[in-house]
Image 1: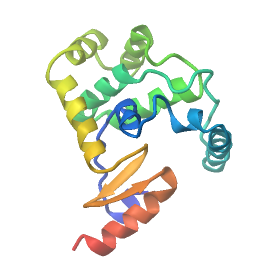
Image 2: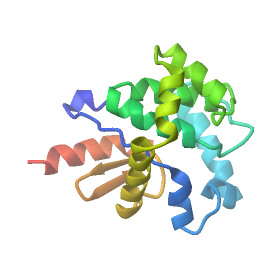
Image 3: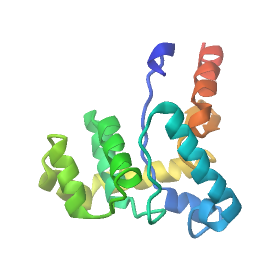
Image 4: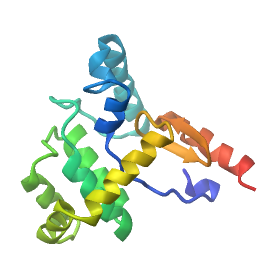
Length: 175
């Protein structure tokens, strides 16, 4: 959709766990508030049906996504973040796989033509971990409380159903 509007999207992976902790939550608000959680899962099912996206509610939610998020930092820098994100989505929300499994992640990287040992080794220490931490702190500083969130200048738009609103805001206020 962003291409239709002539807008490029910059993906900035971050961790939701620290975002939730900043709100005083120790898990997803959809687990804390059961009524909201039931609605959210049903809404996700309807949206996936609407857009023809496969979906299966995972047996565990949320799952530990730290390794996948660290790899998304590398993928963002190297230009394969969208493909990696779609694959991790499929593994978690279609195949109900444990995305914290290094073996599963290695297989996913291999399927994308990436060198699993090199990528996993790279994200285990150093600069990429720091970048993920920094992007998480930046998200918290901007007032982001969930994903996906679209940021246009100082404005935030939360939820996939706000993408079009974010694009229109950009077109009206970016000149």
